[in-house]
Amino acid sequence: MGTASTYILLVVSVTLLTAGQAMQKVAVDRIIRHDVGDQHFFKFAREPAIWLAMLCLAGSMSIWLSVLYRIDVSKALPFVSLGHVFVLIVSRVFFGEHISVLRWLGAGLIAVGIVLIAQT
Amino acid sequence: MSRTKENLKGIALLLTSILASAAAQLLLKAGMNSLRTQIAGVGSVLEVIAQVSVAGWVLGGLACYAISLLAWLGVLSRFALSLAYPLLSMSYIIVFLAAAAWPRLAEPLSIDRLVGILFVIAGVVLVAASGRDSRGGKSVVTVE
Image (tube, rainbow over all chains, first blue to last red; front, side, top):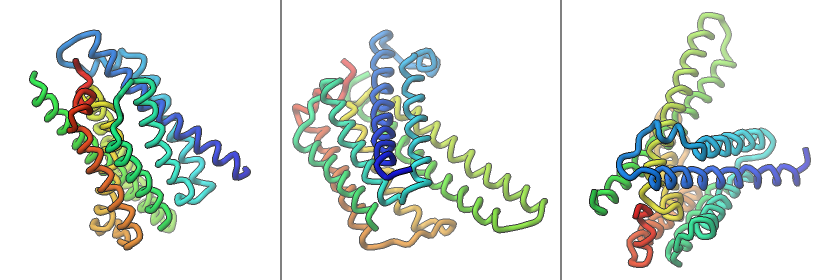
């Protein structure tokens, strides 16, 4: 398999990871909206968004592992940083969260840190 | 429940999720390492014992993942995604330090890698601080 398609797979994996996080957030928000009070495990099990989230995360993990067979971790790990950027964008766009400069800066430092770790 | 109490519960769940996810990584790595020695070895009885031990590590790792996931849902019900997700990076720091300290893995500590870890630590501190600012305060707790 060519390098280009490997990188496309990495982007797909990170996108699915982000979607998985977003769906988990949707699931807990829905459960809280529907019944105030303590959340129980069975309410999660009955929430379709949680299963969609698990599907996304499982897909992301499978693609990730299959790519790691082909390329070095140091080349793949920077895509984890990309995931941090994606999650912040999704939080802003879909959940309307206010993201302060401080938070962007912090997430940026984490992303840089992951890239640096990958290079060693 | 009061907002402060909910926040403290959220922080406790976040730490649980982080620790469980780090433990999962370390256990799976230990399992994979013993799989490698198992392939090198021969002898049917020993092989079975080795396989069981690999399964033990892997099952332990998967159990930790399940704990991490359940705690994470509790975290997401209390904190904004943009606050909680970057904080999950604390597990990298724990994995890095534990992989060096745990004799079974004994992975070398390099200065280069330490610099990367310091960036992650600084980032986590800033993101955590962003959860305390007044405007961010509104998005800290998503529960009305």
